[in-house]
Length: 113
Image (tube, rainbow, N blue to C red):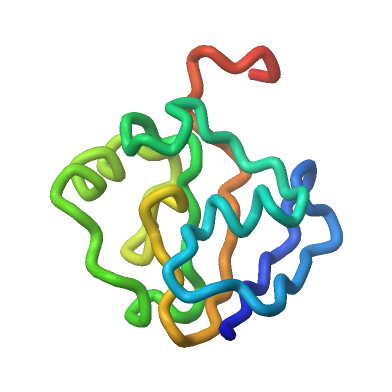
């Protein structure tokens, strides 16, 4: 099974983490949440916001193509890069990935911002 390497994030994962044995087909968001990395997901993973935005530093091409809806939403994400994905929609392929969680997110309902 592939693994996810999570780069350090100041509040969600200060030391970074390696998530071993992530099932193929599982969303990156679910894998992070299953390993107690509390990434925001304001729309409850329904592809209706950008709070679970991540940047793939490795393994981007191993994931299935994003939908048109995901691509449209990504245009609104803070810190968008060419290898950005919504983690609720990005399903694990057979290869390891390296994920960076952006420092900021656009969440108008969050009490932390």
